[in-house]
Image (cartoon, rainbow, N blue to C red; front, side):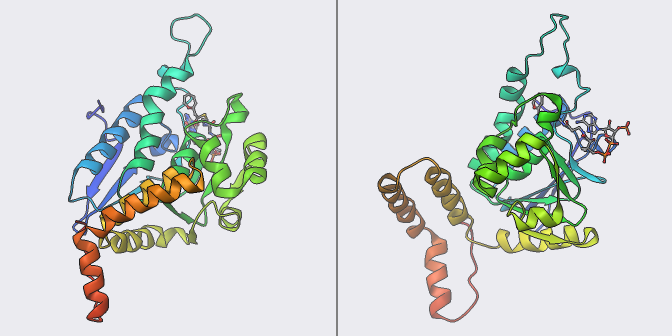
Amino acid sequence: MADQTENNLLIDLQENGTLVLTLNRPDKLNAFDDALSYALQDALKDAERNPAVRCVLLTGAGRGFCAGQDLQARSISNENGSGVAHLGESIRKRYTPIILKLRSMEKPVVCAVNGVAAGAGASIAFACDYRIAAQEASFIQAFIKVGLIPDSGACFMLPRLVGLGRAMDLMMTGRKVGAEEALTIGLVNELCPADDLMSRALAFCSKLAAGPTKAYGLLKRAVNQAMTMDLTEFMAYEADMQEIAGRTSDFVEGVAAFTEKRQARFSGK
Ligand code: LHQ
């Protein structure tokens, strides 16, 4: 359960159905301690369940997006004095549920990368569906600098986003990728000045929130499956997904709006 005594995650549901989640440990560049990871898990579960939420926007407070694991947190230190840190347990309990929920949630998840995204912070940005970055944003595969492998899904997502060769470069060197390079290699979808970041991100989310939510969900399912299936298997899966999409009110409304030459009013049903 999230530690509700800290305001480590700001949660704001806007009237248009956009849920803004702001990582809020700015003095630590929003690094994840236990409480923040459980708070984010809970907020994502609630977002998935709540029909009023049509789109999720994830960002960070202050000058950083997220510096990954809080390296000073007790949960990853050698508390029992055995000299061994059990990081597998920490990943399974704290990060895996976040990454899986971002990918499986049948609603669009947008990331407004306001500053540095390092380690698991970068992985979380990679698992979102769309990234808008401020010119000041950067991405660092910091894991290798502390003798770890990229985790929280980075080995899975990064090669898919930027290709194997570039991913190996970034993961082995741990070098900082600035915002311009991130745009060039496809790590982010768009860039904008820091002052415009939230208004641009909110405007984009507002469009998504007014869209056919069920179809976004189905397309996320299809894309997730396409990453592991062969083409024959996938074509069968795709037909099943389109069968479901074809039965939605949004499909009926979309076709009617096209025929009547007007804007569609999607309900997400
Ligand atoms: C931090 C952190 C931080 C604590 C900045 N922790 N305080 C690992 C293990 C277990 C399970 C699961 O998964 C993982 C995955 C991981 O995420 S491993 C990678 C962990 N992250 C890092 O190694 C990044 C460490 N941080 C940095 O390298 C730098 O802070 C970056 C490059 C992100 C930013 O550099 P600067 O802009 O120069 O800022 P700074 O270093 O001065 O940081 C500002 C403050 O934030 C500072 O505190 P202070 O009290 O001195 O002002 C830092 O100590 C604190 N901070 N990252 N991860």
